[in-house]
Image 1 (tube, helix red, strand yellow):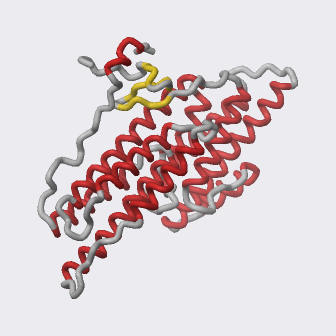
Image 2 (image 1 turned 60 degrees about the vertical axis):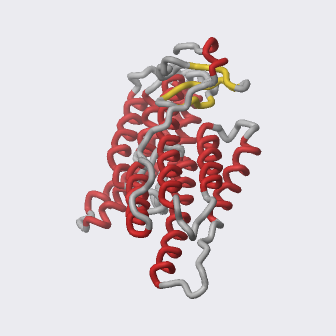
Image 3 (image 1 turned 120 degrees about the vertical axis):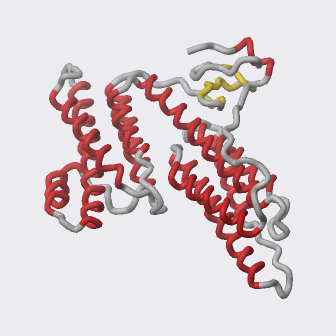
Length: 325
């Protein structure tokens, strides 16, 4: 194609409708109806997803919001206050979900719920405060807070369902970009290594499987093919062992140990990104820095730039199917 598509362009590729965002054609799904019930289910699902990826102990019931706030307000130790703030954020999220449940029950009983309803406003206030506190909450790996997850329930609350889906496609494109960057830096890191050889096909297989997993909903029947492919790709890359010769020097042994650590941490980082389906910029940046330092220490400068952002264009036969959104 002579012209790069605009974000939101749609195209049928190999029988699947895809939407274009920031260089990637992502599998798209028909959004459900824009109702309070849909939003309630979506916010509950996003809240469960959030708690699956953040540090333990912060999933506090909304009924204990006052206790959580009192503990946070009275705490003076900075490190303990951060944890209390995370617990308060959890309670605020759960309170918002509780309010939505009540609103849907009222609606099903025939009560008209308008956007200016006091409970709707209270729900929004809870989500906004939780979003602010969520910036200090850590991912379960301890590396960063992936505060993107904290903002999603508020977006689901404040946007139409269709607009929320579109915002998710943009986040998935950003997630795919980070996966490609990690894969590129891993290949550059071990290019020319005599201990870790023939690794590119495994890295490429993991990157392809990871990006495919990012775009697939768990309710999609293809998940039974996509998830095993991704899980096996992680295992295969994680099983790579350096070929350390007998009587290896201390420097060679150190190289082998650091190679194992990089491969382990790289696969774990890709796994964390895929499961959260949002970018992890701090962890990605720090991992790339580690890889560059490893490369400089043992092999010299990498053979190619690792920060390039790839463009994924459809085949030429797809041009006539583009539909601008």
